[in-house]
Amino acid sequence: MTDPRLLVGTNTADDAGVYKLTDDLALIQTVDFFTPVVDDPYTFGQIAAANSLSDVYAMGGTPITVLNIVGWPKGTWPLSVLTEILRGGQDKVLEAGAVVAGGHTCIDRELKYGLSVTGVIHPDKILANSTAKPGDRLILTKPLGMGVISTAIKQGKCPEDLAAKVSRIMATLNKRAAEVMKSYRVHSCTDVTGFGLMGHLHEMMLASGTNARLYFSQIPILKEAYQFTGPETVPGGSKGNLSFLKPQVELSQKITEDQSILIHDAQTSGGLIISTHPADTADLLADLHGAGVTDARLIGEVHEGNPGKIFVEA
Image (cartoon, rainbow, N blue to C red; front, side):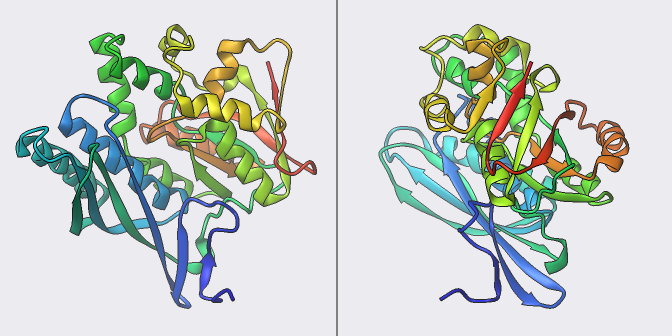
């Protein structure tokens, strides 16, 4: 039996759960953690925190409290490494305007870190992934390519300047984008993480009973990512996305294998996919750029029928 106070649960694979407390207040709850994607512990802490906080922003909410989650391989590294990870996370939480209320650590074979995040929102202003409308325009706020580049970082194949650039992108909160979109007729939103652009957009279209038409030339992709689309640097998650989504994604014959890999690439702390009223698109994009979300691009549109399908033109 479903509790009517649970406004968003697991049935639409949304970014977070939403529970109604009063007519004016609902709680957003989410949790995420993973193994390191970069070598520097402070930067890893920042990225993991930004990734966890993103789910609240994708729902249109404001994060208020977090709990740290740590899997610690005892005896592998000095405790100073953990201190730096937690400091990185703390700094991102403070930037978000939230507070660390506690956490839990367990001994694990692999290092893991992330957050359980609680946010707030008005029950009438929830941005679920199930409410995109035919005619909406689709905006993506961060570039793709972080998955293959992160793998290259782990393998020692990534130049230091590129690793630093990608780390900055992954550590950037989706806070500004979330604040800007509140002023516009945004109907639906989700963020891009492990299932990649295609996977998360498929979930949005399926839940909304709609389909999407994308224009590859308009999708922001880090140009440096193309050098890492070989089999040795494509993450297992990206390969899984390509296989799982093959029946759902129809690509133009002009799109190359490398390009297909990157639009399916599993991201860490990626951007938001914003489904907005077509008349608001130009102003929303201009305000996003003005707020420093300079990679935001109009990438496609929402159409009626064929729930979950994605058509990608060159």
